[in-house]
Image (cartoon, rainbow, N blue to C red; front, side):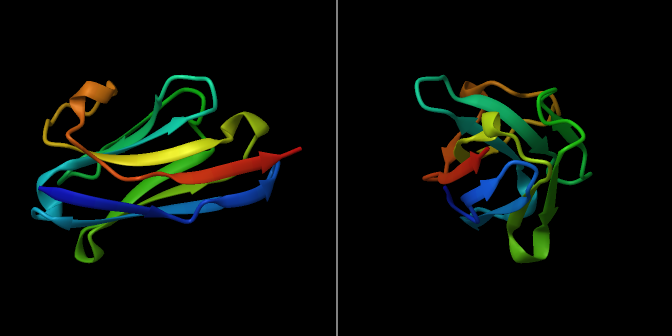
Length: 125
């Protein structure tokens, strides 16, 4: 089992930055990939970014490419999502999730086995 706790959300103006953290516990952190998803009010949960378990390979949704950066610190069992140049359409609850698969382009919700509780990001105009 894996337990995930997200933090770092908040209210920010458009053009600003936030860094989200996803702290993991339980199964060995370096043995799985981690993804970030988000869900805006009235919309389905969507893929944002993913980082592989051992090679640091990353993959991003087109909507965040060039603005968001995912990284991981295996020693700290934490994955980060640095979000720059935020837009109002980035407003959502952000979730991190664990995937034991290896292909970097695993972007479906059903690919992920464990989820955090989410952290709210609100971008004002």
